[in-house]
Image (cartoon, rainbow, N blue to C red):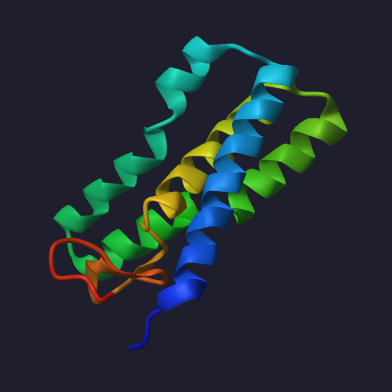
Length: 127
């Protein structure tokens, strides 16, 4: 298994930071219900509970809640149907994903929680 390293890893983490900041800015301009933002920001991390069963199931559940596909579809649906709550939730999901990626938490491999597409996380990570 290979991981992204070096300058490319830094670029991907900066992209995550950009997604976080842009999502928060658009959320502020569009909705600004920061109580909703605070309550829902960490909801995708409930997927960690999948790791109670095993690494493969945990990775599938985590990746389902941390891929940008779901929020993109939710945002498109919200925009097409003028559903403010869907738009807000999509922006919160994008912000959460950007936050995680900026910290180096990428999509997970089934081999274990610390193995991500952005590299190993934790105390024994690759540099």
